[in-house]
Image (tube, rainbow, N blue to C red):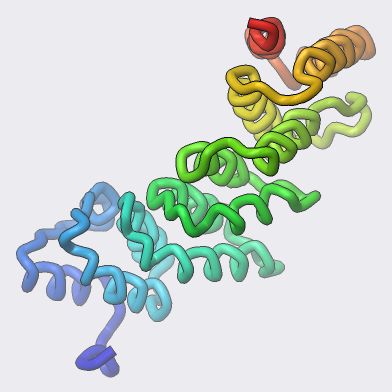
Length: 235
């Protein structure tokens, strides 16, 4: 960018640039909680330039957060590429990847429909996946593609306890599964009753299979929530 070639990409310099535009940023935290308006979309390339060039991980994190404004569509292509780069690194920074996913959810660019579906179709789900699922019904009517995807994602918890790994990713699958089930309960699709019945039957078998293991993974309230959602399928 013109005039930024020899610039230091630190918080002090970003504060100076933003102050010229009447925006006061006192700290990382105030940048994190700053909500730009659509009329300030000219800031997008500036923020992106800082994300690309800063060696300050705190500044990078909070700059990403600051782009999370609905309508900041110009930022989504950059963020999607950054997300893919982050998850493909051996030294993956889960906090940055999760932050990018949350920011993309807040932007909710309708043109990201195919990309969100693509990420959710992958076999290896990640911590941030639920943000993509949450975005889909908000940017696109629930069609057959989303319905089939949500059916697949809701079933991811139907595995034997011996397949569990003790890590937060496995626990996150329950949140994603429940989210998908709640959305599915509100729409009509072929085989809906059969799906709910089979899911509930498998869930009960799962609980009986290993109560102690299940108790460690899910609380009684969570089990009840699954059942409550499934029982609403025929209403």
